[in-house]
Length: 435
Image 1 (cartoon, rainbow, N blue to C red):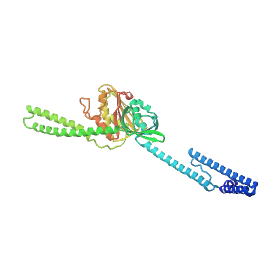
Image 2 (cartoon, rainbow, N blue to C red; image 1 turned 90 degrees about the vertical axis):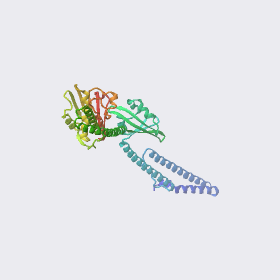
Image 3 (cartoon, rainbow, N blue to C red; image 1 turned 180 degrees about the vertical axis):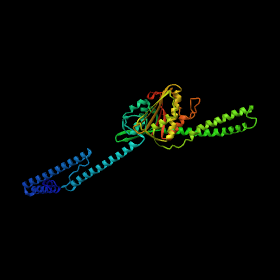
Image 4 (cartoon, helix red, strand yellow; image 1 turned 30 degrees about the horizontal axis):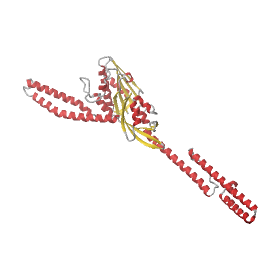
């Protein structure tokens, strides 16, 4: 132990203070002035040593707290050579620093853990401060809002002022549905708000989820149930009529009589209704998909070999990358592509026209297939009901193709939508999206 440590140690200070006190007392009583002076000097030295020790301890504590404040939890105070409470204080400060370091490490691990969860959830998260400034978001938000980055609510103005106002005005515990249109189709989102106090800041947390698939699934399920009921009731009513009229027509002398003509009309109409109903049964009895990977380019080549597209219509195809693969039921997806191409040919009619197929992969791994044509623009009132079963604008149409295609895409984990007229410079564009 060095001389300074001995000099500043507690026993030395106690001895100096006690000795000085004794000399002062003795000098005042009988030892005289020299003893009194020595006693005062010793007491002053003891006091000075205590002040220096106090200052040193205060400086050590300040250094420790400053290190903790700056995030340095590895700083240690040297307690060797200390005595009693001094060493206890130094050890306590060191232990306090260790605990803070452990807590900081634990918080960093938890922050990383929750950050990974936040980055991988499909629900978009937006945290707003009291001034409606964005504090934090997760990657799902930009995907749901179809934005490259999302740093300000003003970016939502591209979809209309109403959307940004909803984000600003929604309060904790409230739920609102927002709808807007992007280049890839209609978007339906559900926004849920939660408010909390984060330190001195009042924040609002918005949870954003895509409900388009849910809405489409409910609508599609409703149409399937309705189709099943209608086909069942129609078949129960029409089948006996077709059977009885056919039986009467087989009787001698009936077929070529006046009554026979009426029975023949009834029989033909009943059979026509039965054939009509059987066409719609495929919507409610679609087979379960058997997905497997296949090359889109090969499938399109095989479809072109079917000669669905007449020579006067120019068909072009652009697939990036050229070896793009889709994981779905190839037989069902082939039927979807055939239905859309047939619709394109019928829309163009017997005139010259163009059909363009474009396929690409998005940043999040989704496959987009655009099928466009330059036929007449579909009116808005028809565009809203184009996927509804039984709806058709053609005299010889049955309204099954597109509704069946939508069901196939839904069963395949994807979607089909009609984009706004003029998208990518085409009058009509259907988008197939594969997750």
